[in-house]
Image 1: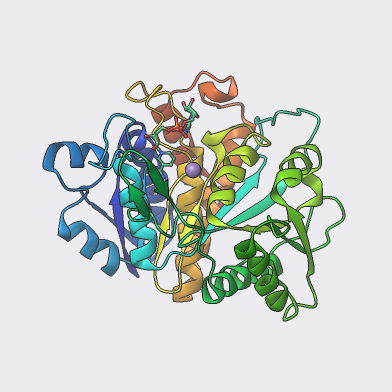
Image 2 (image 1 turned 45 degrees about the vertical axis):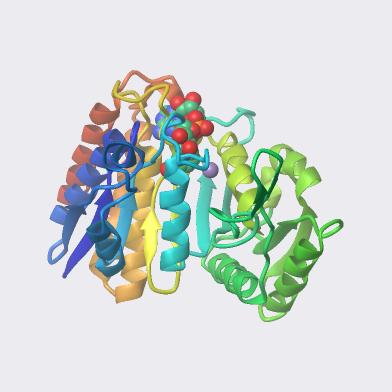
Length: 367
Ligand code: NAD
Ligand code: MN
């Protein structure tokens, strides 16, 4: 079957990493009979805003809605701002999540061969952070109360519906996983600040209600401040985390340090009808345009997209392609082929070439 992928290359390193992601996904699709991926490249992002005064043409939004899935590079530049002083990129991404109902920000944190976290001895890291992505502290984004030059307010909004759906997503995900590295126990940890904020006490209360529907999975809680320490000291205790929008934004970048950095942090923004896949990191203006970025986060985000499409369309050819991509990334990194952020000497594009070649080799070997 043919799948249309709405593709936004974005800004900064975005175009470089998306090109490698597409290269690898094309190689995987070519290796699987009957699978056709069509990458429809769309305009939009911070540079587009700087040139045209709009974040994206209307046709981009329409195609994002009608396509089977969305693949996005990182967006943004610190100097490209809206009249209210905030960065243009946020308006694209936050609005995309709201418009398309992408409430579950799924961010796997996993060690790949050749990568080491801040504690090189710690090899037991395999968790997924699920970030609520449509409300929380981002709910009033673009609005909020303001007395110009004096007072600004961004309000934390937590709803029953928003919390139930993200908590369900986390528990359903836990059922598909091998459990926490420590002892294989399946566990969902609600990370909140229920001791102080009414909104987050409610988040925990709604979470507990959902947890009761999943007696096969251990449900626990943690307060976000001390949890930040525990996550660094004992990542092996955690399996699936579920958290408010802003906490999830911060903790997912922190967690990336456990597995070698942001170049290894993929993500999927998933809703009931749409999904958008992008690395968890930003546009890295400090290394943009130099073919230096690590495309693994984007390539693995593409693999997550194939898995999501496979489940949604009950199409095993997509599972086969996803499996090829994942094995090719592991095999390539095992061989010592690494980008500069991991101490290697491969450029972004050479690394992408290696992974694509490995996809073809693995497919040929499988006959
Ligand atoms: P960043 O994630 O872009 O970069 C942080 C650090 O990590 C930088 O040193 C960068 O070089 C490094 N890094 C990130 N991705 C890498 C990769 N693939 N390979 C190697 N190194 C990598 O965060 P920032 O510097 O805080 O923000 C830069 C811009 O990105 C800002 O304009 C911000 O608004 C935007 N941003 C966009 C998104 C998005 O598109 N969803 C998310 C976060 C930030
Ligand atoms: Mn972020």
